[in-house]
Amino acid sequence: AIQMTQSPSSLSASVGDRVTITCRASEDIRNALNWYQQKAGRAPKLLIYAVSTLQSGVPLRFSGSGSGTDFTLTISSLQSEDFAAYYCLQDFNYPITFGGGTRVESK
Amino acid sequence: EVQLVESGGGLVQPGRSLRLSCAASGFTFDDYAMHWVRQAPGKGLEWVSSISWNSGDIGYADSVKGRFTISRDNARNSLYLQMNSLRPEDTALYYCTKEVLGGALGDVWGKGTTVTVSS
Image 1: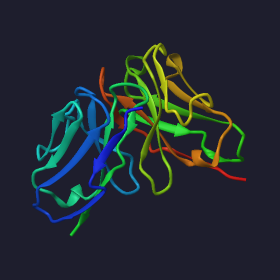
Image 2: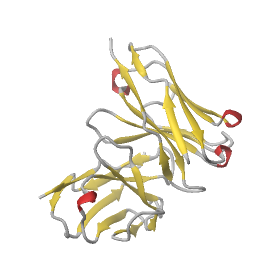
Image 3: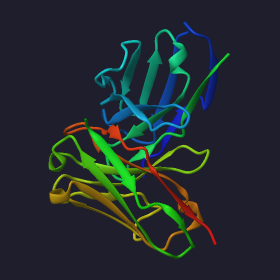
Image 4: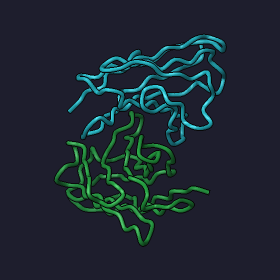
């Protein structure tokens, strides 16, 4: 199974900060990489799919990049509503696998 | 309004079975692949299983392969997860989710149904 290593596991940031989360796949997954946001007590929300395609309704401060094995989620200017957990996922092949998650907390 | 509503969770003893259901509405169900994702208490997300629109392509996590069976009834707009030989480590909130058409899972999510495996 493809392993997805996400880093950091947590970070502290302030409103207005630029935040970067990385995800590394154990093998080439082409562009089959998605990002999700999950707030406490809520179902996850799809932010970005196919590396860099923004899901409808997602603010433009979110962006994704990368290819092959190394991928990045960037929040250009962190807003108060962005404090949450973030997960990457590869759907290149079965079994589909999530990264371990990154918790973005208020500094 | 697009909606997914899971049901069927509960408290079950190890080794027993449970069947989860997901009722879909507000979209053309048989156009979309569907998925189950779970989250153990205080833990991250874990993909469980996926099924294509016509049930022709199915996948399972290694942790549930041979014990869980995903299925769908397009006439009833419903997704199912038959869970056999349940283990304590299957304790989790189980989400039903649909794909972005032809693409990523997680376009829409249900609120989840809780499965607790304990004696």
